[in-house]
Length: 260
Length: 367
Image (tube, each protein chain N blue to C red):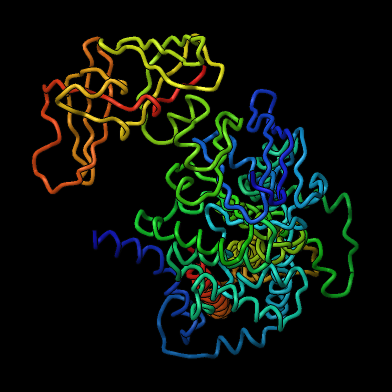
């Protein structure tokens, strides 16, 4: 039992630990330990291409998160609240972007944007529009599913109680339904953010020559050689993800203690 | 007759959910101002649907609901002068106690300084002072119910609707809450309409009770009238315990009704009583178990009497129930109060005893 836990733990985290450890390695290659250094962090910091890709990624993730959270929450609320013809097939179709292989989504997006034509040469951040739209389209179903699951445990008497006390439809939604959805919204937004930040396949197909995101940039750097510079950049990304996850978990836990 | 004015008028209201499901079927009721009114019935009898129609969460398929003389057909729940205490209490989980109570005042635009005052008043009324800042998750079930009560009462509604308010509480608390609800109703002087499936709840709290079954109101009466003069077999059987026999009723010229009860032994298979209704033919004859006497010797002639053998005795502490069987196989149960401190049961199994009751205590039920 202990051994199993230990093995799986090593299996999960050894590569990440290695990656972070070797970002401090004073060597051009990733093979032998030559002593501690921060020079690759400095180098990564000074690599304009890498920084630009990083900023692009964060920008895309930011917009994609906000829009997919709003869109996903709206879809979830609609599916929960209203009965309409075709509701069940709609709910099924919603899960499609989750099960469709990413590569197919990528090709589909490529074909779509080639046909519609996202105008090239727009100033930043409008040039990221195509990628952002692509990210929203595969992120919002995740948000919708999470929020929908949260709403399933919603006691409809809470809404009725709100109305009974004199609140309008909109006041009930704002004061009672949204606060109840909050943990689902946070979890969904977090997932959308991570999905967008580290998506490679779909981004690769939709990004033009002048718009490069972090994963795509790392991929092109690795094609030449795996330098500790890539390790350093990845370590920063891991740190950011960890911070975000922790914040979200703390928020969610605080919320849970208010529920009964 | 009570001359108080009608606050809630239900006029031949029906509610059909689908073609085959009729929850409420042509119900008419007049609920008076300041009254504690109970809708009593088994689950699925339509009592909750009726309550929800008064609150405005369901619309009648036919008929009208009037509150304070106004037709409620086009009035949404948030504009009706009624408030509801929900079965689950529906206390808002993300708001503390005083925000919960203040919510109804906030959304209806009551000035802020009045809100604080009225919230304090309402919390005082339900004895929740000092818990203003608690979250619902930190409260007991009984306290959550008090929050729900305060939240509804703070709006000063014309009518307070309570949907099975005691069903989620444990037995001891339920008993205490009954008395408190009655006291609360007297002190705020608001009409209470309570839905319950528990007959003892309805009998002990309400001024008047409507017994419902399969979407229809069978009888509306005071608790004692309901118990002593049930209008039909369902009510007689649903409220309390009862012994029911089939009988042939023959009306004599002098106005007496003579009942020929099948399966009761001589010398008296006939129950004669003064009864003013026009019953005749096949009827039900019923007697409450606590109105029956068991004696060793033959009782006086003015009583309904026959002999039966004791089959079982069940001991409940304050009372014992004796189950007897007549020679013809009729079963009858008798409640005996254990008034004296006594270890021996009131009857031995196998004894043959005289079963008797005053003729006027006999119920005659149609259908």
